[in-house]
Length: 463
Image (cartoon, rainbow, N blue to C red):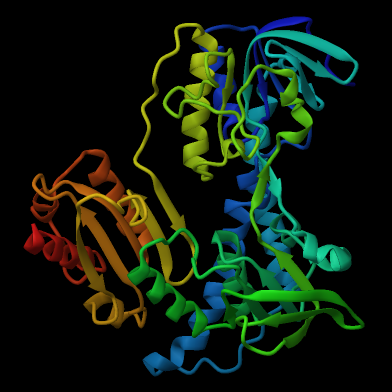
């Protein structure tokens, strides 16, 4: 039985994901007249189809790869057998466990405050849900995103999976054509390759994941293209049905001939679109940007001067879980205290890609810094001590500092276990430390972090 929809509330939160749940809790600190509206299953994108199941697949791939490179240490474990059904069964089992933790939290919310259905705006402060309407003093849009599937895949739609689908596979396919060169494409493409799936990545540009620095980008391309076929930039001529799956016809460049390859499956990792179409934003006073996303203040999450706030992946800015949670808290707090809107505290930007080697971006990117003065410190992991010990000596790290003050501005890196370096750099960036202050911190030996120290010394010499 669906819960009745109240006729009037102080705050309505649209979406019960990684931004919506924190927004609901923050608004509840100010008023009990809050409702949480969710059109689909609860459980968050991260737990159901994002962060957690992808890391489960990556963990299996790392185990297989560890056995594959063991001869480099003089260890010969014998033949490797990958049970695709067992791999995917564990992914689903552990994924369901993580989803269960989220559902436990949702179950603790008062049933009268949980509304099922698609919310649509009638005006800024009035929503329609099914055949009912509710007047909401303030609204938080936290409706998330959905996978985007390009038009050129329309002919083979029955063979196309998005990342939401992958984790429902009962076993591993023989081959997959991966379209995209972003975070999802690289993480899943490499994992599938290491699990014995024949993979080719087709990217529209030379940009790899979140990296913008040309030197780091070149290193990343060298690393990944040496492990599995990685075609970028590519011109896809046609993707058509084949008796064995799908046939991809493509050119490596404008002057090259047409090549073709047949795959059992297609994985479309070509980005995600904000879930805004069904909200009827045209019924509001909100100003929209060229992508149809409400223009908002990133420090308050408020859309113009309206009583509407937006948070999480739906605003298409920083689409990672911790940013969504921070934005949700800020949006929910301001919706609850409206019109006393306050700027929230934002963390230093940080993105980590769980490929091998990993990629990370912290603070200002190389692209952000074009047109202003900065110095760049660098280190190659090819000769870095601990990295060579582990046979993981691949990649490069660049960090950026401000001339004069010496303050750390940001970092881009591809390298071994840079998820940990990213945290050290993000904490330092958030505290506005200088290069010299970072160098005064202890560095143990032998650790990968000594590579960060080398880059810091490189920057200091230029300062």
